[in-house]
Length: 113
Image (cartoon, rainbow, N blue to C red; front, side, top):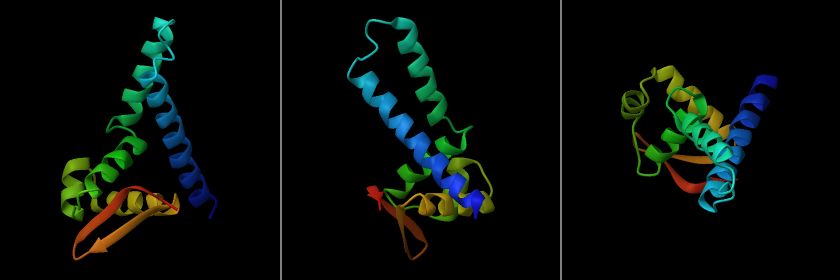
């Protein structure tokens, strides 16, 4: 139970930080401090990378916006079937609405409860 709460919190905290950094970069909040801007850009790239759980979950959300099967997610995320289901559970626990139609998993882009 405690691990479930932690995983949900981790995803939501990373999602909030990622969204805030992307917004700040888009609005040019770091325009006067090049070093801070580079650090923010590196952090966004790192968060979106496929080496992080959050990056894989973001990728999974993008894939599911169009509809995707488990084998397609395995291939795109380069992970095991078990990991795909673990990430699906983490996303659902974080409030993402995931629909299963046939064999395809789908979600809407802004589908948090």
